[in-house]
Image 1: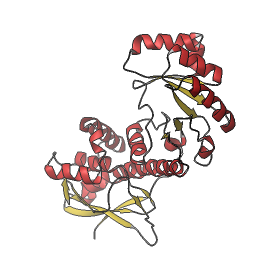
Image 2 (image 1 turned 180 degrees about the vertical axis):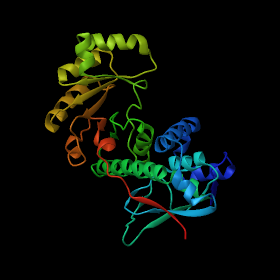
Image 3 (image 1 turned 30 degrees about the horizontal axis):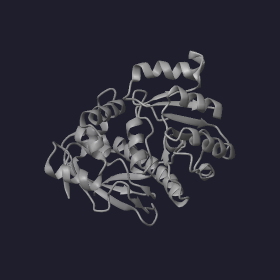
Length: 312
């Protein structure tokens, strides 16, 4: 299957559907602006001497996956070469986002795509394209491991990331969460109101903070409150919070307090967070906990290894 990165042809739409089913979530103008900034950051003085050395003859480069993981980030990889200009991408059948590929640099490298275009353009986009793919796949891989732990534990809730994302890279990390099967949590400060300890201290009480937030957020935004105790969770619910985060609870205390809280406020979502890792998250599984969030999903992931090599 061949994809021209110029325009929105039927081939491109078909490729997006097959190889990146979630790509329709990503607004093209926003992705283009982000990728343009990445490329500009890589060439701030505008001269590309290495590109001048290799010239503009049409050549091919093969994309290889060299370590195991969940493939994610295809839309960003494509956008890099669209911005570079004059390139086409042919994706191989196994290159489908959300798929685990048991790649290995020594014995089982997996060829995912062939990129064709002016050689200087291929090399100009190479590292930026690989950076986006390796990091997005890293987030998706770690997220998927946590989601699989939840499934094996027969837990009903959602595994979620947090807002602890890399500045300038938030969209790709949030996208990686989705590809891996996790929830994004709030995308940014505008999507959901989260009132944390600093908000509470600044306004004097949980009730004051929730009341003030509700006046301007209306019916269209949920309000979440970070709580350090069952008493704080109860106050948040009475004030009208939609979600309470039970923060830094021990597993045993979480299960007891979440059950007590849910008995009284079954309509309020309960999130467990704070110091939870992939190794400990199963200790927090409870019928009364709806969401478990882990900052490590976007802060502590290992990148998946890819390379792009000119065919010679």
